[in-house]
Length: 113
Length: 108
Image (cartoon, rainbow over all chains, first blue to last red):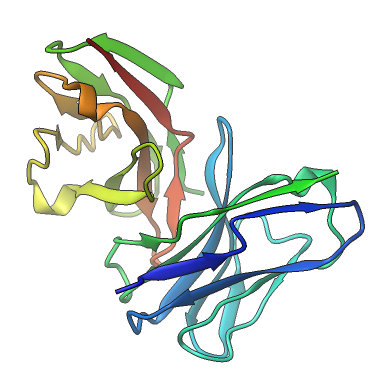
């Protein structure tokens, strides 16, 4: 059982480039979310989805886009990368409302030069 | 707005010593609180949640609504407890708000 799979694990971008972080889960979870992890700031919610076709903004959505065309996939797009987006990104899924238990991917370390 | 504060970035103790990782929160409703742990080279995972009132790996956490705290405790630390610990608050939409994290180092 793969759980939550993120790709790529590492990526280096130049300022202004675009890219997509992929996230897939095989647990048939309705809820999926993207967090960024920065030292001393914990994990901050970027975007989330409560089901296919439904997405919403989290705490730090600027510079990122998401879509949820299927239950399994929740890609995160950086439209024009900036050095402030250098971070570790985590995708997570959850079985449903108020469960509180998020299942995380391994993380994607992104560096923007 | 909800907020979770973990005042210690780093906590270093010797093996066998008691451990308390502090967590304070602000939330207008009835809070649901969790502790997540990230061991070296492993995924972030749920350690425990306040509603279950359970002990996991010797850790317990009690919700104190009067002090708005949810401190994580263990009477005797082990080296394998060394990890990054995050306190988290569940808002109404099942999206967690995390604290800044505390790195626990247990020295032999």
